[in-house]
Amino acid sequence: MSARRLLLLPAVTVLLALTACGTEESGSGSTASAPANGTPSATSTVTTTTAGDVKSADCPSGAALQKLVELPKDMTFGKVECVKDWAGADPQGPKVGDGVYLFHYTAGTGWKYYGEGSGYDCKDLGLTVPAPFCISDPATTTTKPATAKPATTKPVTTSPTCPSAKTLGSLVELPKGVTFGKVECVKDWAGADPQGPKVGDGVYLFHYTAGTGWKYYGEGSGYDCKDLGLTVPAPFCISD
Image 1 (cartoon, rainbow, N blue to C red):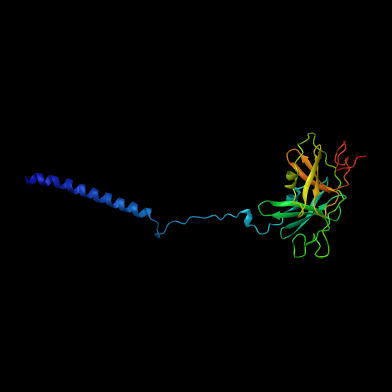
Image 2: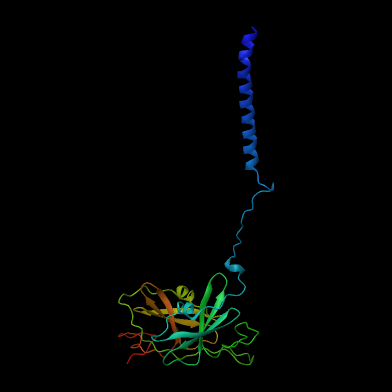
């Protein structure tokens, strides 16, 4: 009887030893899973800024502004000067005048063409500080030039659908109180008649190019149909 008990003791001893080892491994694994300092790991956060949060836009480059309008052949934008949300681009090339192309920035829509000339009144633009592209004298009124820019761009062979006044109005920022009335199209050219106070007898001229669509081209009343590549009469240009 005592011999049998002696044989069972080693087995019980081994079982207790294995149980103790399993308990230590389990405790060791549990300790490793907790952070060393007892605090949860940090997570990164990203703050997004919407267009409406932008108070003043960065001054755009000449190349960026050239994407908004179609310049006559051999003409490019040189120096760009910005004051608040206005940008004046100086055209460079043959037969350019002393005016600038003026662009306006609006949060949510970005930069848009506003006008072309040299007689802008800073007060009419909402500027209370001097700017190189407008006149600060309050007695000076804003005038829009009526001289057309020479155009030598050849039209594409296909004729697009004539756009609406609303469509063309979305491509430029018109002065306060001015809207587009009648739109007349010939081939890939569209002339929009401005309606409102202090408008002249000129039109806003737009050109269609396959792949880029309608783009602002110029403003005035002295366009030559031949310069626009038109061999048929058009209401917005002069035919010989």
